Length: 225
Ligand SMILES: [Zn+2]
Image (cartoon, protein in one colour):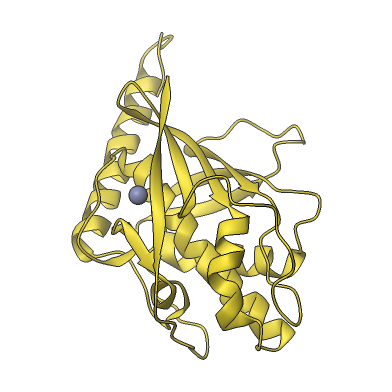
């Protein structure tokens, strides 16, 4: 049985930011993301999503490695998650074109849960994200539109990574792990994890390192996580 966790929008205000924001700290754990995207997914927002997710997750102690689930790759060493972009994420030039109806009310993304346990599978709902961002981004020039959209995607995905990596269904009062995103949160210049949440991520890095050490020292670990 699976339920859904939702990372949402709450609509309202939009902020129109300007350039990139970076805050990096030394990465210490690999996070492999198997990314499945639609054939119609435009490249621009996707590239910016990857670039903007890097500093967000580096601040949490994770170095993101992207992999294509269609191709055979070497087994992942660190944490591993699977992310699917449902539909095509992007706002076309001139604005919003007809989209298929949204399949769940306000959800921008979700992470699977089974029997109370958070699973490493997340979905980003592109039609809902498109509808949320289109009014603010349609007037923007192409390159900047892609950047702003991609950075918003990174924030939505980082929220789901929080659920999956920290292994929690809970939320916090502010920052990327709060339960509800406004359009302003998606577009503002800086929007990051709270320090207490970063501490939880870092603890997960330590926990994984301990597990890895334990597994290596055992002859044949019967179970893995
Ligand atoms: Zn959430």
